[in-house]
Image (cartoon, rainbow, N blue to C red; front, side, top):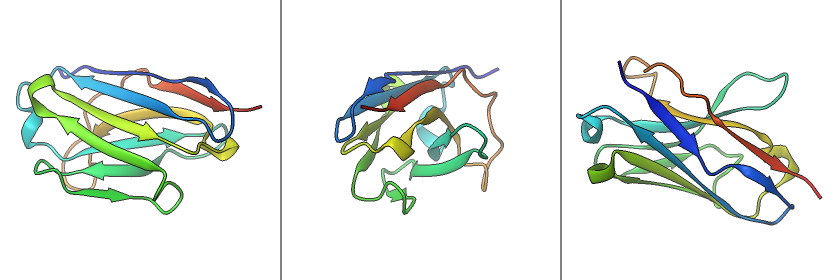
Length: 117
């Protein structure tokens, strides 16, 4: 069973930055298209950033131009650099495979991001 571990969240003021990390125990990690998701209180989980096995990226409109997804296949890790954070970015952030093309792995615990002054 694959284990996902997200980290790097915290409390930050509007306009601040955070860098999230997600490490997977899957040995074939490098072949998977990976996604950062987030779930705000009372809302459904949404896909916000995607990276293919080759490094091509795609972003949701709500984070485009502010967030950057990257990956380190040797370390089985993906990252999410979040800049110019806004209160509406407050959510629990999760990583997983891209559920539109491959089965999801068991969800990790996520990492809480709170943007508040």
